[in-house]
Each structure stands twice: as C-alpha cells, then as structure tokens.
Image (cartoon, rainbow, N blue to C red; front, side, top):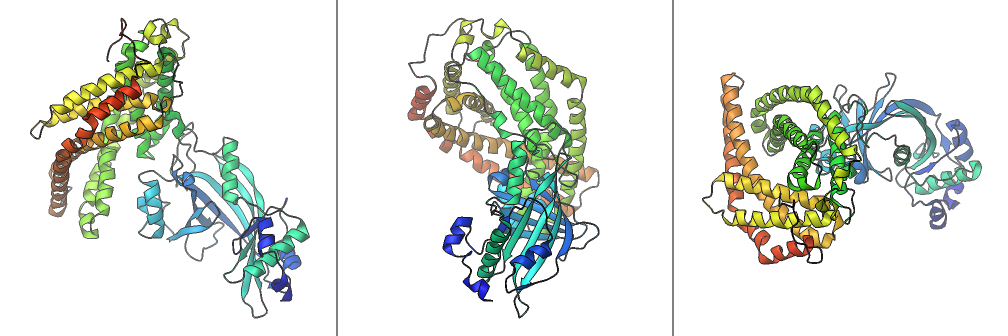
Length: 580
C-alpha cells in the first residue's frame, strides 16, 4: 500500500493543479467509453477491485418555470431504475444538489408515489425545508430527462474495506423531445478518511490516459450547453406544457417583463415598444394558463393585461387613436375573463398556507373545502380555456399585433408623442402621486372600505407608471420611493384581500352545507378561519395611518418631484396633454 501513501495527487500542489481539494469527488472526461475493469486494473495500485457492474437509470431534472433553483445554485434530481431493476431505497430517489454536485438533501419516495408537483407535496424533512423558501408556490417542471448507463466498481484494501469507488457514466439527454449524447464521465469518489487513496487513483488516471479533470459538474455543463443552444425548456412557452410527471415544459423568461426603451426615446415609439412587450408576455403565458400547471402563469398573464390597460388609460395621448377603443375593450374583457380562476387560485394557495399552520386533525377538517375549491376551479378554468381558445381572443390579439407592428406616422404625429418617454411618464407619476396623497388624507378610522379600495386602485396605476421607467432612473432615487409605495400597497391589499377572502369563506361554507359536502367539523373550521382572517383585516386596517404618513410626508413629495419631474425636464402643458 506504499503507492497510495506516497502519491501526492491529493496533496496541496497537485490538488491546485487539478483544481481540487480532497475529499471532493474527481471527474474526468474521456473522449469515449471504456471498459471500467480495464481502467481500474491499470490505476488501482496496491488495491484490488471488484468486477464492474452496470445499471441503467432515468434521471429527471426539475426546476420552476422561472428557474428559481438554478438561480439559487441548486438542482433537483429525481432518479429511478430502468428495466425492472429495483432501487435499494425505493422506486424514486430525490436529491437536491449544489453546482459542485454535492448532495444538500435527499428523499426516497414509495414505489407508487407520483413526482412532486409542488414543494408542498413533499413530506416534512430537510428537503422540504430547503426547497420551500426558494420554490414557494411555483410548480416543479421537468426541463430535461437523462437516460444514463452507469458502470461502477469498488477498490478495496487487503482487509476488504472499500477505499475508493470508480464510476463511468454515459447516455443521452432528452430536452423537448430531442435526444443528444451525454459526454462520458469517469468519477473517482473517495470514502471518508481515504482521500489519499482517491488522490493516488486520480493521479494514475491522469497519467495513464491523459484525461483532463472536469472543473464543471456534468449537470451544470448540460444546462449551460442546452441554454447556449436555446434548447433548455425554460425560455419561452411555444409548445404544449406538461406536468413534471408527464415530461418537459417550456417556460417563461422573466426578462421579457422589463421595458426595453431608453430615457430619451420619444413617448410614441416607446409606448409602441412597451405595449408590444406586454403583448408578447400575454401570448407567451397563454399556453401555461391553459395547461394550468402553475398559478403564476395566470398571475403574470393578468399583470401584463393590467399594465396594458394602465398604459392605455394613463398614456393614451401618446398612442395613435386608431384601434384604441378596441384595445381598451379587449383588455377589459381579458381582465374579467381571467378573474374567477385567479381568485380561486388565491383561495387554494391561502388554504395550503393556512393548513400548514394547523395540527393534522385541524387540517383534515378543511380537506372538504379543498375539494370544493378544486371543483370550482375546474369549472372556472374550463370557461377560461374556452375564452382563450375563442375566435374573439385570436381576433383581438391579431388586431393588437397588427396595430403595434404598423409603421404608421400616428406614433409620432403630435408633439407629446415626440417628447422623451421619461419626461411624459414622469409628469404623470407626480400628478397621480399628488392625487393619491389627497385621497389618503381624507381616510380616517371610520372611513368606508370603498375609499381604501379606490386608493388602492390609484396606487396600482402609480406603481405601473413608475415601473415603466424605473430602469431609466438611478435606483438610489427610485428604490426608497418604491419601498414606501409597496408598504402602503401591502396594507391596502391586505385589507381588501382579507375582506374578500372572509366573505368567500362564508359563501363556500353555505354552498358546501347546501350540497351536503361539509360536516359540522368542516363548517366550524371554516368559521374559525374566517374569524381569524377578519381579525387580521382589522389589524391591517389599523396600520393604514402608520404606513400612509411616510408616503405622504413633505420629504417624499419633494423626492417624487425631484426624481420624476425635475425642473430641467419640466415644460408647460401642451394641447392634448392630460393627467390621464
């Protein structure tokens, strides 16, 4: 065993050359597969090796549509044996790994368990604890399937103890139905306490075969290569989406929600670009909304619709008059058509979150409510699918596209359409800000809820206008103003949403009781939850004055004027310019 003890591959100098620090696993990239027995025979030194065994595996790589795991430097692998082979631990083995390939958490699922669609589908444990804060409500979708062939052997000392494991991995990757060969990898895996042995074997492999050490984990490399080739299905929905249990889903690109205009771009052409981007967002989310794999597709669809409506309403004088009425009516229709399904999505997400805070017995009492919500959602979603597949929808989208693609002089025919977009939008921001301050100042402890709702709608318009141009302005100026605005929106949103949810719970309880779908325990659990929501609504209502004060103070008003309508950009109102 002298050979292992004197080798310096695992020592500092050689480790630096290889980019390794034992006992990290070492991977090599040969140009073709080889007999693992031959590799082990030529590199085992004083150790002996077991006969190599072979197995086939199916590995599905999961992520959310907006790539939350990838952005967090993680990947979720679901492994299952092929050809009737049985896993030692179960039919499905889930592993959460970081970019270095190190296992962060794992879980074995029983033989007939479906793939998890959401993090909430996992049992309590380390994997759920790591996944849930990152994934939240997003669905877990397959972005690639790997068909792997793995050969393995163990290198043992004279006492029969395993000191090093050798693996050879090859196969194919399947992305969007297209299969491509996977680069062959030879992996040297040290057992705890035997890094020196692994280093010696790795050194002999490098010397005997001339293979280079891989500095990039195989899965990371596959993702990089796939994205460079625009093959990874997390870029934009163009094909039929599928659940994690069914296959790959092409997903969204979050970058398409940021307006791509410059500060000095004339308002008319800038609005044409902005509305075009929002239309692309609507079209790209449509397939995900229809497939109903992830509630955020519908949420983002609706946000794009609301932003389009806000742009037309607040900045209509920067647009050609042709087709404006049709666009207003069309976006109003889309907002109404998507509302019921989105409301039920919100109720179902709230039920999930509430159930996690309850004991198992208390949560079980609300199971019938979940079934009722699911039935209501199914009916609402079917109606939404009919709308999104209707001739009315296709005609509306086609007309919008034609209107926005036309090289018409109407995009710059008036003076206001030729002004810089930052100037036009900035002045509207200040005007709406002043209006919201006047509205909020009239709200007291006894003010009707409708007044708070009206203020919330104005704040949404203000938020959308700021987001149209926030990337054109210094973040140091816009960030503190947006923070105050978001805090006020959060409180007003809580007041209204909790009131709506409380009323909805009472309605659901009545519907279930009339249909004989709820026993007394369920009705009591619904009533208790409604009481809790009403208490939280009252608490949120009491916070209004506290969060409104910093939003309305003189320093904030001055900051809004200085940021969005500085004197250097101000001008007297022209004919046709309105506050929206």
